[in-house]
Image 1 (cartoon, rainbow, N blue to C red):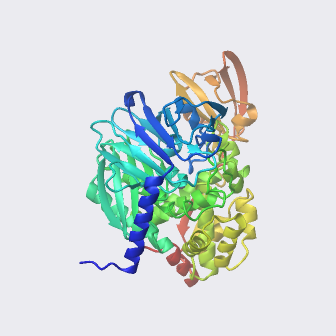
Image 2 (image 1 turned 60 degrees about the vertical axis):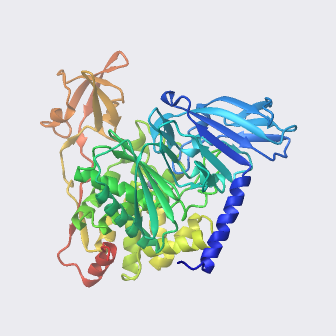
Image 3 (image 1 turned 135 degrees about the vertical axis):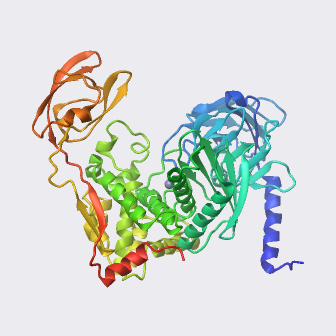
Length: 599
Ligand SMILES: [Zn+2]
């Protein structure tokens, strides 16, 4: 027998008040599927107790976590608005994503519309004859000014579809009716309907539900064990896991990946037959670690601009290097701490990231804070020149996290690490103040644990575009880093190509390279070089030297053009990290704190 403790009574009272709210929600949705084979979702939205003379309904333009205006209203069709008696109500489409409804004579509206859902990704809805993935912001409309309203969602699955996986709370004994206490929660809760395989595991005191969509060669017992390790390791960073229940919706594709974070769930893309390949499997576990870490970093501990959200337009922040970059840093650390990667493998990954950033010309053009602010128009709208003009706040943000972690550990003589700063910020801004942090506030937390101002790092590496001095920071932990390309006189063209049928086409040109200066263009079809036809520029360069002139004959949109290119030396770095033999006690202490394994 179990005693009804005070906490249990509170919980019981909460259930009663929730049930009350559930029955009286003024906004209710019903989802059904009459033409799933044609990728349509039928949505019925009922609004009750309307007092205003005009009610405006809106479709979000973006999905939080994916910083691009996606214009979800483009997929809305056949909007019909009726009153309680089934009589048509007049309305006006007032902007690209809003409808103004005349509610002077009706206190209840029944709104029907269809959504075309055929974009395969973790952040967009996709429906076919076998299943429905509903990414809530592109399915559910909201009433302007009423995002705080509770809402219920009734799902009517297609005959034969037996499972619904979502972090939304199901109303007890009500069939497939789900409840959200407000629209932020609804928009943060994707829904999978179909015949997905579902398994469960417990970790960190949380019940985890894993919905495997469209098969895969995974080993359920191994996944349970490895995912539980990730959960425990990530929870150890923050000292607590705020959820009671968490849902993984995993979409298995022929190829592909990606993930989107939510407070109580995540949607992951995985390779259906990749689970038995060790390297692909490790990448999958890294993705799990990344999205799981987000349940704290960005979903709760967050930049002030990222919640409550404005679903109507871009939500700007200069801090995605913390939200995404730090998460990318911890994704590797968690994989290492959980024992999926060795210390040398961890360092090799770091080396790869350092080289990738060092050799991207955009690293000299765009700062991390700019990359974050402009995510909406740059990172999410890449073009052929992106590598020349921008930098990833994921990869470079992870490198800055490395720099900050090493700085904190070094300055505190091994007392603190970035973990302490993250835990402190989570407790202060999420738990105590229940709001996001500003630039200055997060910086102050980092400085508190570093024990000194971080102006140099902020001015040069976060708000500036200076090369990061890794030999100093890695030196704190007893590592040396050297450029093996110094003095390399191999000639370098700076043009990436691709083949289109039997044509050799220019795909990218690196800033300041020989090809860039001479004027080879993206989309040029290279007909011949020095009079010889070629389909491989790499072999062409093997017997050439710096200073040699190559005569390119190109077909540019039907017009032939000759371009002389003078080869330059390869400017790219090849950084190699090695442990130094004579590390002192202080360096050993920093390394032990930095790359500690899970106890
Ligand atoms: Zn992320």
